[in-house]
Every structure is written in structure tokens, then in C-alpha cells.
Length: 445
Ligand SMILES: NCCC[C@H](NC(=O)CCC(=O)O)C(=O)O
Image 1 (cartoon, rainbow, N blue to C red):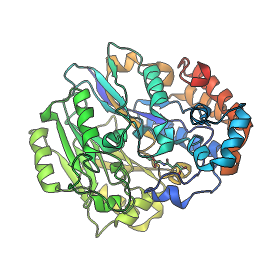
Image 2 (image 1 turned 60 degrees about the vertical axis):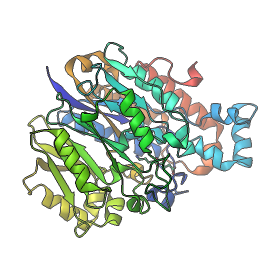
Image 3 (image 1 turned 135 degrees about the vertical axis):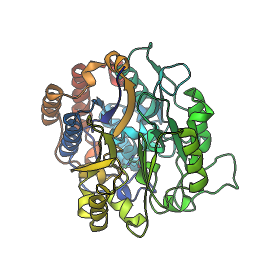
Image 4 (image 1 turned 180 degrees about the vertical axis):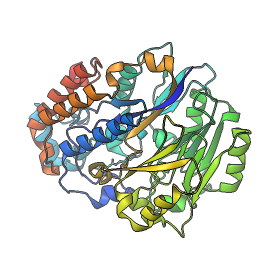
């Protein structure tokens, strides 16, 4: 049976904006209050997704969420018509209105943690939506994320959907951004690498001093239990708290894995040598490549600015690996020089493809943030909702849909515009018909 890894990219929603909501995420804070271009953002994302499909990979799309989130605004006490709820919130709690308008669900690396059937005891493909409790604007995503994942992977013979973890800082969970899977082939049992920022129940364990560690060990362990992973197929490794304090708010800003390659920065982890020995032992006999980028070649600051590690390492149909990088990597001399060198080093990575995803980058989301990886076999691929799969027809259809419904300029002041609610709901209602998702949004129920 054929096995492969599919990427499910988040479609950027109509309210994409720069609100400076993510303390610890340098780009989000630096671009706070800049005007955004939702139309360009969505089209940049679609082009990246289509290009990966054209390289021969299975590529899916995950629908965005309903924003402004009037249900949350009503839940916290704002009353009246939609327009009244928005204007009252804009006046008395502008920070809460901003949190209820973010298009942050586009970063589907944070949608869920996924364990392929090759790794799980029951032989099912497991999904646990991330609770994203560290950030208010993201903590309101998991219920709708769950609806969208269930409408996309909609066959209980193959797919097991769990509820998100308890909504408490002890279980801070950021999904696949803090998880990577190493394997000799996609269909073989792999080693799932869980990268956590702190131990919630051990106050004396290392943790960052300045910025939050969003992922806890307790959350990672809970996911491994839920997904029925065995001890020999899991490794828990701590992210270096010093780099979190320098803006590495998720592990996928400093490391990325694919099959038998782990591409990471020298300063990414704690106890690196001991943990790598554990990975090697659990990985088994076949060769594994640890590609370490030294600080002398790429400083942490350059990694954070360029998103060198927020690249997608993909396996092409030829078996060669390619890196999908943001154009920001080309614009940073040290990083560009490193990538030019990397493809000559004799590792499995032989090509680099650059994409302009600047609208997303300005909020701290690179190519890898925009996609959720789902390793699967051909039966699982045939069982999922085929209307979510990228091809020429869906690419054309979604670009037309974006042209019809999206604005090309949005500022924070526009978030209180009641017309934005109508535009966003009209767009999403049509999208659920295009992608045959059913009623995944609260406004449809
Ligand atoms: N994986 C990338 C996630 C980026 C995301 N940024 C944001 O939510 C910024 C939103 C804003 O500031 O408007 C985050 O920090 O979780």
C-alpha cells in the first residue's frame, strides 16, 4: 500500500489583520497596527499550496474560522444587535474585540497534533485539536477547528478525533508546531518528537524568564497517551528556554523534521546529545540525518527574522527532499548563503523553493505554520473529504471566491465595521458549499 505525507494549509480568513496579539512573537508585536491585505494574504497562501501540489504532493485546504467572533463577545456580556455588540466592544474593550477578530486559524500547524495510523496502537489516524490557551485570540479556535477537522477527515473507520485538552495553563498545547515525526518511510512506525517549553507541575525545572513557554510537557504526554503511542515511538525534548526569550515562541521556528532528517539550530534544545541518543536508539538501524545549523553561520536573530526553520521539508515523488522557504530567507544574506550551501552538503535535501508569504510572515507565520501535516495511506486518503483537496479546479474556484469576498486593506479600526461580519459570513457560507463541509460554523447552526 502507498503511504505519503499530505499538507493541509489553512486558508487565510477575510479578517486577516495585524493586531499585535502575540506577546513573545516578534513579528506580531513589530507589525501591530499596520494595515493588512487579506486578499493578498489568502492568494499568497493558495499559491504556495498549489505549488506544493504541483510538485507532486497531496495538498489539502482547511477552512478558516468565523470572525469577528460575535458568539464570544456575547458570551462575555456584550448585548444587542451585531452592530451594537461590535460598537460596544470597540468602545469599552478594544483589546477583546481585536482578540475576537483574528484570522489566526490560518496557522494550521497549531490546529492539532496528528499521529498517523502507522504509529498508533489501534491503527487509526488520530487528531487532537490544540487548546492554544496561552493566547486569548487563539484559545477560541479549538471547537470550530474540531468541526472543520471532522468535516475534512470524515470517516470514523479511519480517523479518530479527540477533544482538545483541558483549558488550563498546565495543559498549554500548541499542536503540531511543537511536534515532529521522524520515520524511515511514511508507512513505517516512526518516532514522534514532542518539544515542550516547560514542565507545568515542576516549578524548579528550567523555563524562560521573559516570554511565555506555550507548550507544556504535561500536554505533550497527554497527547501521546490519547494517540496510543508507545514509549519506544516517542521522545519528549525540552526547547531551550533562552531561545524562547529571543522570540522562538514555537519549536517550528527553530527546528523541522521530515522522514529521516532533523533540521535544527545548534541552540534549539536542552540536553541535545542525550536526547539525540534516545532518538537514534528508538529510530533503529536505518540512517538518520541530524542537520545542525551552527550559530556561527546563522544567529538566532537571523533565524527568527527569516524563518529559516519554519520551512517545509518535503519528500518529492523522486525521493529527493526539497525545502519550501519564505522569500524572507532569500533576503537575509547569512540565511541565503546557508541554504545555497545546504543543498550541496550531501544530505537528502537537494532543492530550495521560495514563496512570498509576507502577509502571514508579518504576523509571525511562515510556510510551515500555514500547514498541518497528515501522513496517511491510500485508503485514508480516499476516505477523506475530496472537496478539500487542491487541484486546478479548486485553485481557480478559491481564487475567484477570494476576489469576490475579500478586502484588499484592513486596519484595526475596520474591525468594528458591522459590514465585515456580513461579508465574512457570506464568504464562509459559500465556502462550506464549495468544500462540502456542512454547518461547521456557529452562525450556520
Ligand atoms: N505558528 C505561527 C503562529 C503565529 C501566530 N500569530 C498571531 O496570532 C499574531 C496575531 C496578531 O498579532 O494579530 C501566533 O503567535 O500564534
